[in-house]
Image (cartoon, rainbow, N blue to C red; front, side):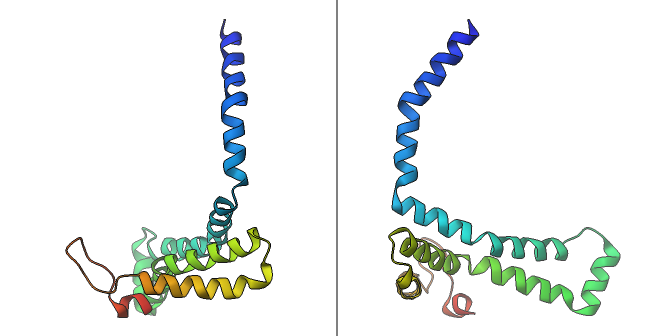
Length: 140
């Protein structure tokens, strides 16, 4: 009996879900977002490593970091990697879109245009809905 249920489930997945997921995977816009997210993996990895190095639970190590000034350096690298993630994502998705649409020669121009649009649309003041980054926090 379980064998027929497995066959029915597999038949349903092959008939209904596989064609839909294939269409979604072949969508150029989704491919652009996927390529952009994959491009961020190195930045995420670097930020995560420096966060790990800055927060190891070993008191003598923390004392060494504080006395040598490495704690601030590690924190700055982590902050740069994580706080500018929006900028990195926009640039990476724009580059992926240029590749996905077959215009690799326009990747740099596409990245600059996307970054300019992003920076124009980012709110630079706080509003009633919540806090937004100030200009000095956004641009470093």
